[in-house]
Each structure stands twice: as structure tokens, then as C-alpha cells.
Image (cartoon, rainbow, N blue to C red):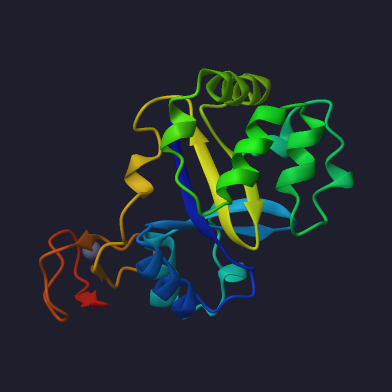
Length: 196
Ligand SMILES: [Zn+2]
């Protein structure tokens, strides 16, 4: 099991600002809400958006993320309109142990102890089983979201900052750690642009 906190930003956020948030948070993805549904946006998505001249997170496609709110039987309408909807969602799921943990640590707190708590692991597995998913959002509030995975390492590739450099391919920017702006991409005819 893995638990990872990601930044959560309004969909009106300019993509350059979203990039700065990723760097500051040392995460390579963030959560936004499109049509009131949680969506995962990666550093590569942002680079592609910049390459296409797009402006805000709402312009990016991203990937829809299953959340605890999708568990069958839960009345999503009662919660999804509220900014702080993670807490009532956990109440509705009747997962008090999980809610107590999230309240105690806050969305920014350490989750190591959570990963070692068998009751919490059971709660998370029940949510994932209910969704039929291996990765899902367990909580989301303005600024932060908690992603959980059934398997060890399931969200590890999102931990750590985004790559420093991407090529200017508008569809699929290739990523690099060891290039300079203006270097050619190894995979296409675009050049590389670095953000730090
Ligand atoms: Zn490329």
C-alpha cells in the first residue's frame, strides 16, 4: 500500500503557476477538478499544454481519477459540491478510523503510521475493492489531495519533482534530466526546453 499527498488546484489555475506548485511540492502530478470530477494532471501534461500554447489547467485533458466518492451506494451529490468534501465522504463510507487519521495528521501530515496501521489498511482496501480499482483518491481539499494505492510503489512515480526539461513536442514531450535548453530531442525533431 502507498499513500501520497499531491497538490490540488482549481481548474482556472494558469499552467505556469501549476508548474511552480509541482516544483515546490516536489510532486510530478497534481489533482484538479474538471466537471466536478477529480482529474490527475502530470508534469508532462503541463509541458504539452505549454507547447500547444494553452493557458489553464482546464485546457488540459489529464486523466480521470477514481475517488472514494465513487463507491457504489454513496450519494455523491451530497458531498461533491463542497470544497472540503473528503471528511463527509469518509463519514458516509463509515470509515471512522480513516477519518480520524486524516483529521489528526491533516492533509499535509505524515502518512507513514497510516501505512503501518492494519485497520486503516483494511479501510483503504474496502474502498479500493468497492471501486474495483488499484489506485484512488481518498481525500481532497483546497490545496491538497491524498492518493492511495493497493500495492507498494503504486504511486511512487508521482513522488518527486517533475523533470527539469521536456522537448517541445505538442503531443508527447519527451523528458530529460541532463539537457540544456536548445538541445535536440533524441526521439523527434523538436528541441528541448528546460525550466530549471
Ligand atoms: Zn521529443
